[in-house]
Image 1: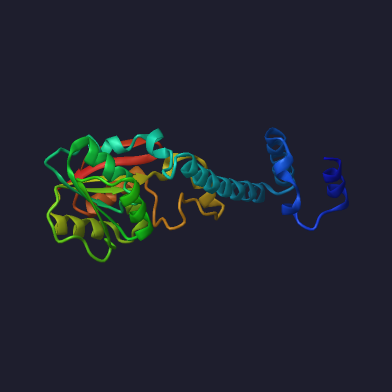
Image 2: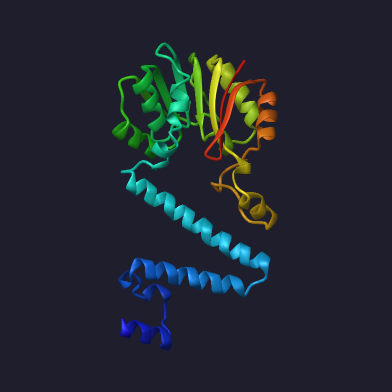
Length: 253
């Protein structure tokens, strides 16, 4: 440790060359926090906030990666938030379900297992589908690769699931109208992020920072903007609840 302190005093060619892995975790956390606090204290308030929010965004991304590792390939939010149940509670054994943007298949698998419904999961990412077929295979699920923005299955479904999908799409009301027309579904189960989840979100936007949870989000909703888009899509909101900074809703015609 003495040699490390000496290298700090003399200067090093790269911060990454420092043996941070040798430091006790608590000591390292205190050191990193102290560095951030000192840097922020020397900046005007707007720049201090931009600096701290940028650091927070990078840490959030790393937390997500390690939550997936800790969950054995599945983000632990699935079990903490228990949002799968919102979908399965509104689906019966006789339903035929289209899960658009099914990802790795965690929601589709829960629905098929709990309700016995037949589920078709569609996703444009073949790597997601490979994991779905490997980790979340089920005799009542069929996984298909496809871009729902370009084409939807020419089949009839009772229920459409859109779990953290709408916020990624442009022209969402038009897409919802097409989805209903193509599938004949009378119920859509939707989960989207809420803009009003935290005071830091509007502050980030005010400071000109990226305030979104994902950088490919086209929108994140207020209750009013969600209601307006459902009106534009000619859909009635039959149930809406706010949990975990998200809107969970059942809509239909």
